Image (cartoon, rainbow, N blue to C red; front, top):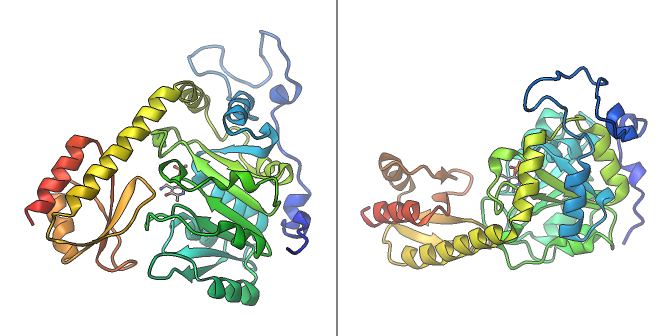
Length: 341
Ligand code: PMP
């Protein structure tokens, strides 16, 4: 593997900055009378949140067996995607690489930052073609490769992730938003081995807390320091920090919910086998199915007429709809509509 020197990849203006830590959090004064931050003395939510998210990071550190200095917390992983692009990609000059099809937000934030978005077409099994990856990285030298596994919207896990980390001259972001639904091992265990990559996880999917907007980046201490430097000081509100801490303490509930999703996934998979309008159900490691239909427009409209909203992927993936796993009642409604088409 090539020698990786982080500072060669960071935008110069960002290298010159120090993280903003509020006066209170910086000094950790433990006094009861707080007149330092122009807050109100009244109200339930009158104090600013901890800008360093210390308690949450310590708890995540125990949960993931990783140093708190290797964790950044964002307003959903969406925010972290945006920040990572800002750190490494010079506007109008640099490019990012993403799988195609994959999660649209990588391209969205790169475009806002005025970076070129390079797309790596997946093969018929939705895997990356290594030759193509090597070619495009050599020719275009993208700064970041967003590798989504399990991938949204295809549902499959990417094989041989380490190969891409080893062979990319820049930062590889492994987006593990759906990792809890997969048999695949998290790439977190590779963090000791490589310094050019970041793992993203979220409380939005398996933890059932999309509304709280809490996502994590795990990386080297140097990368985490950069993320903390560019983030808004109070990017994760205090209610969300508390909600997530409570959820982590209810591990049994988390396990039960995950079990229920697995059960529903199996149930749906079996039900799909007897439905005529379905052409193909793609294998999934996530909490959704990508399904190819004979007549996608008709299926989508019929579902909508019966108050079931799904995610049509045409024309990106022709004839396909992405459908996420609901509770039994919702899944039954889905199956009933599909059976009647
Ligand atoms: N990554 C992937 C692959 C996703 O599908 C999503 C949500 N659809 C996200 C990240 C964003 O997650 P969050 O809610 O943490 O911003």
